[in-house]
Image (cartoon, rainbow, N blue to C red; front, side, top):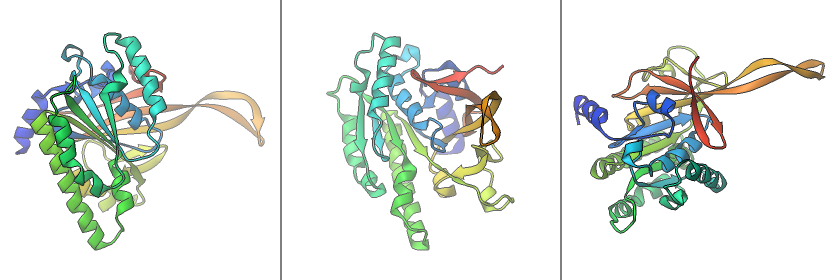
Amino acid sequence: MTPENLLHLLQTTQKCTFGCPIIDRSVGGGVACNSLTEIVSESGCGKTQLCLQLCHCAQLPLSLGGLKAASLYIHTEFPFPFRRLQQLSQAFSSSYPQISNPSDHIFVEPVHSAQQLFDIMPKIESFLANRDSPLPTRLIVIDSIAALFRSDFDNTPSDLKRRSALFFKISGKLKLLAKRYSLAVVLTNQVVDLMDSSDGINALRIGNLKSLCSSGRRVCPALGIAWANCVNSRLFLSRNEEVVGEGDGVVNGGELAQRRTRRWLHVVFAPHLPKSSCEYVINRQGVVGVESQ
């Protein structure tokens, strides 16, 4: 598919809402179907919670920005957060009482290796083609893709070549399924510290942002440029602590400071989206955007 055809497809394709108008506005209405969207961040930014929230919102009717569909959640980092899933399901049911037992339409599948993920692709397609379920499955989440590849391969030329080949096999199959079944496919990725502060290969700019920063550190997405070429869109979640005031008391001779964590979502690259970002918070109900002042 040419870049022009991909751009037209993503501009006109159906989107799945994140359940928050502020976040949706930053990403052009939600996660696009027929393509692969990556959410990358360090731990603690809320990428798993955002994915769980998306699985609930996929069940919403088309009139509310959903897909009226079930979701398949492939998790690779253990244990799976079932308690948080139930908490989000209760909050979702309170907001949308017309949707009963939303967690019943989120199918969870554990995967332990990249090769296992590739091997179960026929099983995934059979699951998608199943017409007997009450709702079609139109959202796949893989959380996280980095956990599979970073543990299975050594940093040797032969292993890196084999890893890249598997990148393209898995992403190619996911893109094929996304187009065949009009799926939204979301993958989470981790970050690594960017050690080179110069303009060398590690600092190569990909997308809207010159560099990615989180928790006061320069970072870059795991898995390198080869993997970046496998996804259609990349969202980056960042977090930073700010001192908002002085507290009471003294610890080790220094005054206590009141701190708060601020989190941001950035569009790094997407053929159908301009540079955009928004602040968000995480509460009991889920991930909620903050209106800019």
